[in-house]
View 1 (cartoon, one colour):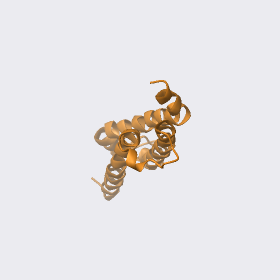
View 2 (spheres, helix red, strand yellow; view 1 turned 90 degrees about the vertical axis):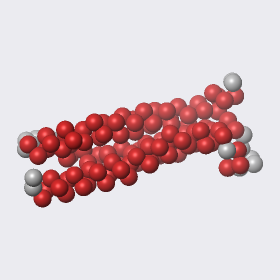
View 3 (cartoon, one colour; view 1 turned 45 degrees about the horizontal axis):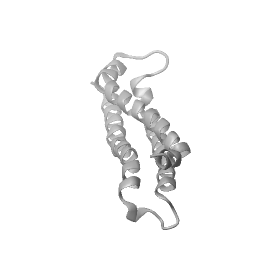
View 4 (tube, one colour; view 1 turned 135 degrees about the vertical axis):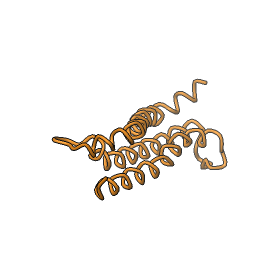
Length: 124
């Protein structure tokens, strides 16, 4: 394989590995907001504190998308591609898509929490 593919693999691996903790954090933030009341300011209710965590989830989801977009050209190139791109897609396409979809789903969930999280908790 060429030097280019080695550099591409390193860039993809680095991006995917550094994105994984962001995904985990975005998933855990709502649970932390609900289950660790010592983090909540005294002026907040649990419902509004939960609602505010949605903004953090959305921010992390956007960060996931930005990091994923940085490597998308390696896996899904536009225009004419070589067999080296096929190898990268085969090796990393599944992980890339899992991260991509998790970012998308987290953005939706975060937006719903941000917009309606207080209502959800007030009616339970």
